[in-house]
Image 1 (cartoon, rainbow, N blue to C red):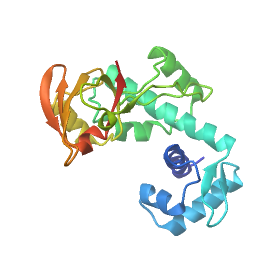
Image 2: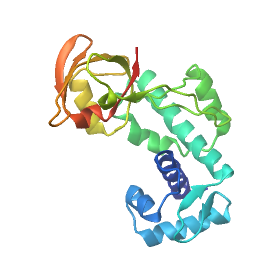
Image 3: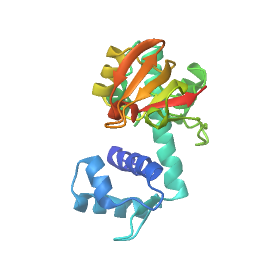
Image 4: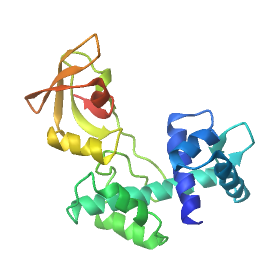
Length: 217
């Protein structure tokens, strides 16, 4: 596959996680920052390779072959993110763009050795699950912080928004994976929250809370 084909497969895979009824060409075009007509051309190529099911006006879904290929791209991306953070001391807001380049390395042997070298991690630095060599994803129990009610407490296990801006904001507020977060109060007007992060009081917006995953104690 070309880099472009791999990028399309990965984008369709991520979109299917939030939509079980097929993915529209417009949604793919928005993610890929291209025209719908260009998406249609690519989908025809992917369909010819038995990577997607595509019928005009009916949305797109991955075939079993396409799903496995997409998971292997995601696997490489997330393993490289772990490597960059744990072994090269990159911060978690720096690694996404670099991993976007490294995920296209073809060598399966290299990726499996990288996996073993890192101790077979199950999550990337942002808390997202890493598929194993067979494409199986570990189950991670989590829910959005915004769904919690007063006095509930959990540990931060992931982020929904992996943009550099959001991760830098979390660093500034000293919120990281493993931080203990407790809901002190929630405003009914705008759903903003008063929380404690490792016993330190903090006010956050509903938008911030809607992008943090926690596992309840």
